[in-house]
Image 1: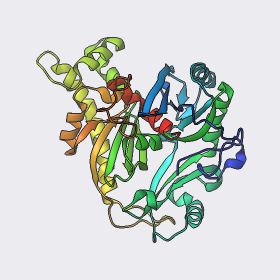
Image 2: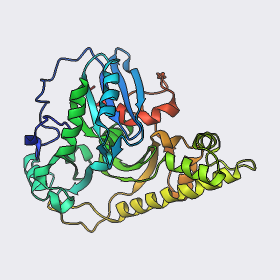
Image 3: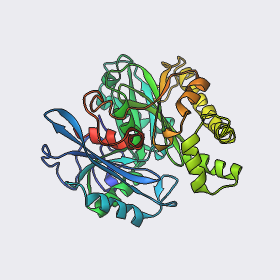
Image 4: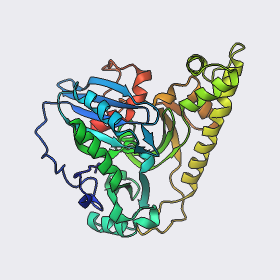
Length: 380
């Protein structure tokens, strides 16, 4: 069950993210139109169209509109006019106002619960989670919008994934979409969309996805196309660029160029660059290792908030996505440090095979569209 926000009223609080259609407008008949995902990150608004054709799913139009510094603060919208303007520009180039849109991962709570029995009904499970929500996260059920992905989607393990977001956050984002002339058919946390894009349903392995942006990195533990846990740390590509500029005494634009050209690949000519970047990537390594250790040694909680002693299934591999994932040598560096397979994500995993169809969006650019792809998949 995907996360669908349905009204722009306080009455939405305590409701499910996935149990009704927008009260603004009934769901239209859009079978001939593309599914459009719109992801709002700290640095840009990105949109992507996916179309069903006789040959299968194909990429339609796509694009991004940069957002300046100061547009967001602590996951909230600080410059509403700038976001509305960017969304209006998107509306001017797409064929329908109906879209699938994201909420920021850093403002959401995603966690896994273990079920005492596979026979527990969905309604009973929801009621139990709502009643005990404050034992899991610092958010009262009356102030939250909650979605529950039930155990049958997470087989072979008996569990459920819970997503909770502040109702005020959903209302804020619905407001800017409405003002721009767009009509979201759903709002869901970006981490959920990323998991849908990169992990196919039925895949029983637990993977860790690092979504690396300009200012932040989201750590998303996922299985069978479902996000089970997510957290966000203050680490991104902009910090690496700033560190390099400071170390070499150069302007930011030049540091960005050197970072892209050299990355973590050491040579006699760029040893100082790779060493500086490697030292700061070490901060990311420590945080990732800490989260993997916690995940592996702490069991899921029961719906009522009781911790289970047994650990969870360990992480089998790590996927990198987001614009910051393009740092040369990053995957091999992390693989060596974490003793796990690490690779750049294929954002088209759940769309089509690259052996059969090559999209016009280059792979290094596609990494930044991972959430938008997952959102559009929601509409197919």
